[in-house]
Image 1: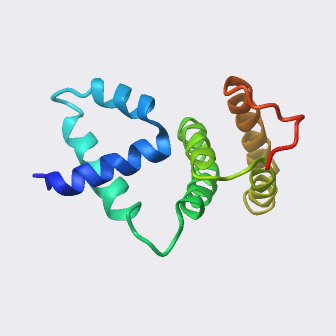
Image 2: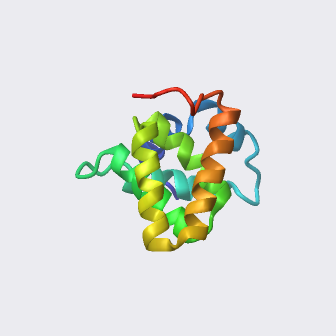
Amino acid sequence: MIDKKNYTKGLKNRKKVLGEKYVKNTLKNKNNFNNDFQEFITDYCWHQVWDKKHLSNKQKSFNNLCILASTNKWPEFKLHLNGAINNGCNFYELKELFLQIAVYCGVPTGVECFKHAEEFFKLSDIDINKEMS
């Protein structure tokens, strides 16, 4: 059984990073099959891990992007790209991060990072030709 207080804290973190709309939609689709999993990730991932204080949420977002890229988890990569923006990551930091990913994970992975980021920016109406802070 999930601790209600931890679940509530995790839900707050999850909404802050991934966005209220995404989380509401995910939870709206809970059912008897996936309910335990949703409670598990909200408590374990979003409370037990994301509530730790030694790394900032921005650093956690960078870590997620690196891990997801290196394991070819592109749908989750795009979701956490949005989380990175929500956590204050800027255009220039993301470019540098993707270059580093290309060096350590291989150029094809770097290609995918830039491709998925450009798709995300386009869908989010973020002008990649305009300087961002």
